[in-house]
Length: 272
Image (cartoon, rainbow, N blue to C red; front, side, top):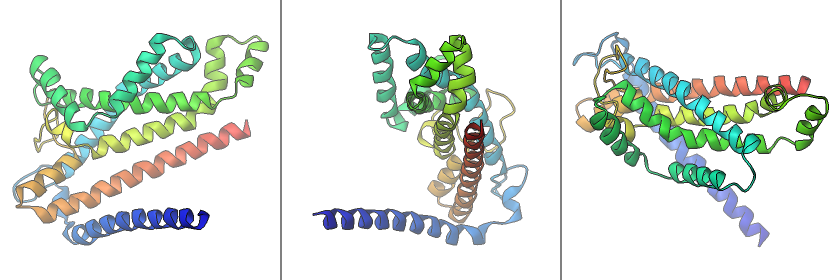
């Protein structure tokens, strides 16, 4: 029986990595030959099909979303673990809500964002509407990762800090937060990957304008949206594959930098 389970696990791993490498290889083979200097022009035209505005819009969306979602998500996680009473009905309601939100399809977030932010609040298709919609999407992930990181901290550390006369807030910032930072950062990394790869929610809120947004109320398109629009139009399929290569590269760079930062924080905590 154990041999069968071991074989099934190995087979599943091989299939998973095989599909992953096939997809990445297919995109690289089709996309790399189509990477030309014209794709990185400052402005999008029908001749150069530049993806540079999409890169800038993607970075703007990621930064704005993290600026809003990270404090709210992290503080909520700290409230649920450090301040809220155990077994509280409010805590149960918040956790059920976050778990429900994490399972909602992105298209539903997009429709909600369009109805509420774009139409009701009259933000139109804009960077602000897209940012607020994506904030709601990534909040459950940040909250849950913060909770898991806090629950992994041994209560003896908190008790030792209290025993030395430190207050609640000082204990959180000096003892608990440094230990949980790598776990919290992991949730933020996953959030960034979801933001960069999102299309369904943004097409109804951010829009598909080809320019760089010059204000919060300007429309634009991310790299994922740029690739989606080019592929669905059917006129610039080669350029869409080239965009896919850049999208993979951006995600890889973000993940590598985030992992290095997480490892550095973990090493500093161990040295302390």
